Image (cartoon, rainbow, N blue to C red; front, side, top):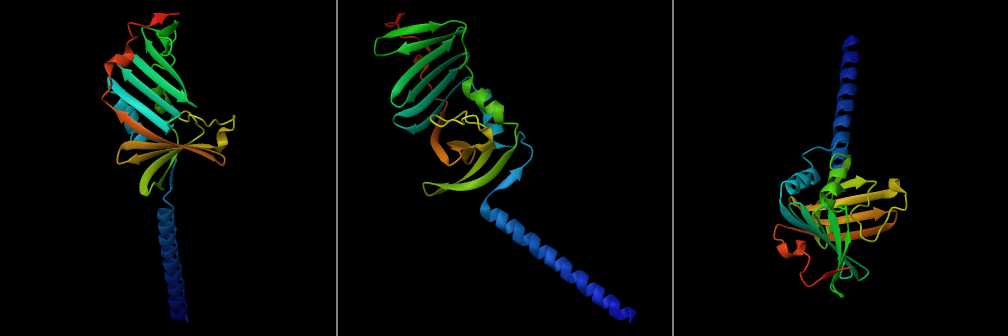
Length: 220
């Protein structure tokens, strides 16, 4: 009888172990198919953290995000000076930030306005990346224009959006950063049922004249 009981117990334990192993395999396969894996802690190994570290070491770079021809943002940095060119619904605003001031350029009139003691956007992109690089994220994969990209998704920010805002409902806001290798190529902001997908171009080749007020512009 004891021998029979042992055989029955061993059989039951074996079946339970096999069931657990099969269940774990199915779980990880399904999670891999969904392309998402939650991470509780961000670190220097994330692609956003690596991008931040890389850009923070550069003296000169540009960071351009484009929604369409009428909605686009260009940010360029050269040491302690910066340049921003924002096109929103076709309306363009250009600023040069240097020497502790911000200068608004109006190309149509060839004039500029000085905002003294204002360097708000001097380190714009680095500050945006710094705000999220150490926060929790979700990793996944998604197809865009027929190509699969890995993404890192962060909750509660709309810093990179051009048109979308969070309307003070940060719990329903997500931003995904899509990478081709280590290159950031897209940023998607998701607010509820609305989405905004921006293409991204980062370059080390920046025209130095962007950081100078044209000599034929007059101050107003």
